[in-house]
Image (cartoon, rainbow, N blue to C red; front, side, top):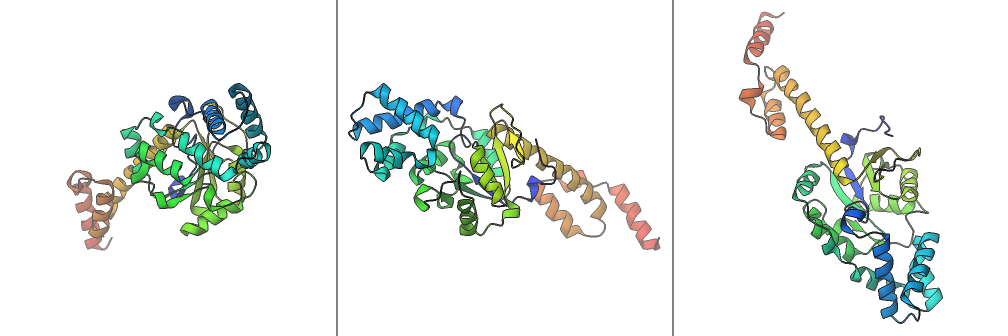
Length: 280
């Protein structure tokens, strides 16, 4: 499902979630099972007196109930400071399970606009993922808005998205949020953003989802097709405007790295010039 009223070429600010968006959970192994085990290991190390299998079950159940309050729930249940548990959990996660894809890096860098992150993970984890994937050239660490910044959960309040846009000076009509969470996207849509859902092969019907892609790879291929379409349009524009505005020709050619001598139809240009000189 795609909302054709929204043109992704008009987006100037891209907001990304991290987990399940900047990397594929199945391909990397950093999926819900891995995260539950890592969380259990940290909990046991912090003194939770439960059998590993039992604790994993508790973690999976409580996270499914309310992921936004998970660590606070753990504090209530086991008396471990939620902020310390949160911090130690993300430290224990292994970003080196993510394999860098240089082609994806090039495609990400080619997407026009400012790149930002809104995540319920930690700053440290977000920056480790950015560096591991190679996306650090496109997404600067200072553009990360993480849990430490706010108390509002993404899935329950659109204000976090509004606040994040305000921080970087972005306008909602030119901003897009990319998520693998439908509840988060519903709030992003309420904040006025264009919403992009990574469905991993399971399309959904939701009026607050503007675009759907299988994963990051499919999204970046789509953006490349849009750029190629623009290049073809601008090649035509070069031919028509050449007799009148050489500066604009140079600008367009530079943008697409075009060879002007190849792109320009000199015979048609001479005919247009002659017609103009005759006053036709």
